[in-house]
Image (cartoon, rainbow, N blue to C red; front, side, top):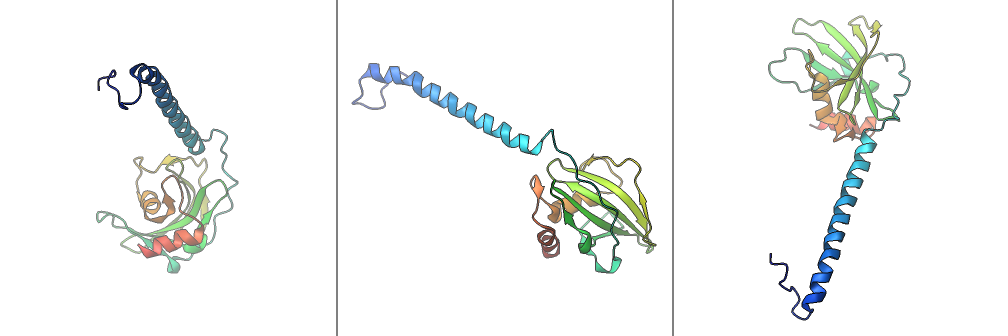
Length: 181
């Protein structure tokens, strides 16, 4: 665009040229404001003061009440979440018990939490079919996309636990979403 060309034929050329730097300044200011707002929104997700709420004892689970989770065809185990165990905590973690059933019928359960804001999962405890829990000694947050032996947490997050970077509503809403897919 030729900067000396007037957009408004009634505006004297000198006034147009004087107003151009102001318009440029306004555009720059608007751009910086958008960047600052984006950084502030990112800060909500990456809150450095965030702390996980106290983790309760693993809940009892019922393998007969599971809501199935769709897994890729190459996964031979069947996974389902016990709807009675799903809890959304004030710090944004969705905790649940997921049950894995092998083709031979053996049952294992995992008490886990998904932190949608960071795309992470943490295993708190494991149980066999007897329902006796073994606590994980030093549970750590791991990326949902990390190389893990099972991608059940990623499947669960995508199928109803997370909506973007937040929990997909209350526990009731999450269960509704899992059942309706």
